Length: 97
Image (cartoon, rainbow, N blue to C red; front, side, top):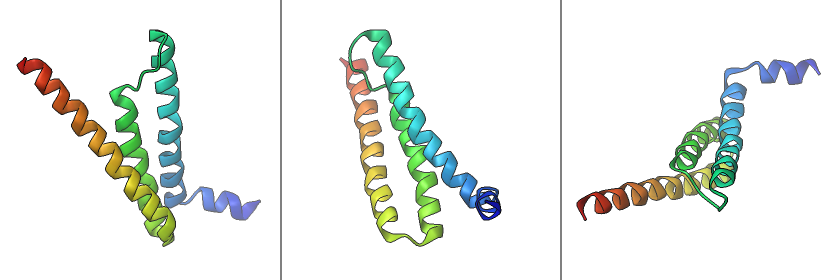
C-alpha cells in the first residue's frame, strides 16, 4: 500500500491522473450538453478536453517509455486537433456567408 501511495504522490503519476480526469470529464460535458438539447451533441469543449487529456497522458506514456500508449495517444491527438480545425473553419464559412 505504501508503494502505491508513494507512486501516486509522484509528479508524473499526478500528471497521468490529470490526463485521465480530462478524458473522463469530456464525457460528462458531452452528456450534459446532450441532455440540455435533448439530442446528441458534441460541444467544442469536448475536443479541447480531449487535447489536454491526450497531451498529458502522452507525456506520461513517453516518460513510461510505453510505445503502444504513445502511438495510441498520438493518433488520437491528431483526430482531436483536426476536429477543432474543422469546427473553426466551419464557423468562418458561416460568418462569411
